[in-house]
Length: 272
Image 1 (cartoon, rainbow, N blue to C red):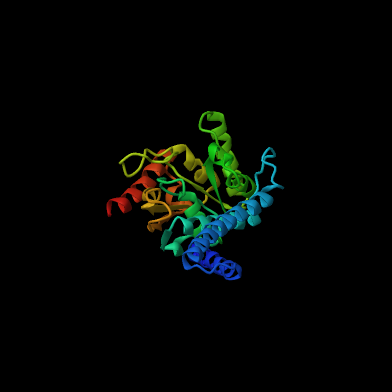
Image 2 (spheres, rainbow, N blue to C red):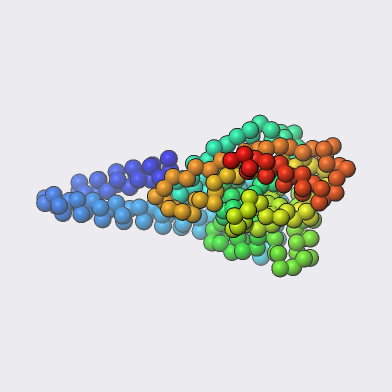
């Protein structure tokens, strides 16, 4: 929809510019229209990045942020929706009614694409949510600043102590009821042909230490998004498979919880 609106605005401006430009030959008018269309489209894109840059100016990435920010979350969701629309990503949502409404939670998902968390962010836009994200994502222009401002938790996999600190920060956020936290138990993006990578059981300390529900979700077909970007429509789906409340896992250790969550995910993936 965003792509269509953007093209309509571009064409409308181009037609107006052609109308006020004194050119009689028809082929010159066609060339002029195409030139105006390309120029106007580039101008709109440049304007978007200028506005994004201005919005990000007050954000100090050198200052630690351990709190959720609703305003910057809305800004990121808007920018993400524009990007997903331009990339022709169509998302189907399933069984969202299972998500707890009276408490925050730990959300787990499989990880096949760089757009995974962005897709979830848009779908759950009305739920306070941050993700534990790898350090390199915070270096992306505009988006990196937004992640920092929203309160995303930076994960540095090269240092075990930093991983521990990231988990502790997540536990504090859950205990404070400030927001929910999303994490991929695989720990990294899955580039293999396997349905899921081995889970990092340590991430489930976020649930066992906070006693919050574990919302088990699955994303399908996100791996294919990078193919034929901008020119082919990509249908992906997001489904809430199950919710494990504290009573469901209180007698399990982190490894047993990881096995249980992985089994739920694999069952859904194998059905396809």
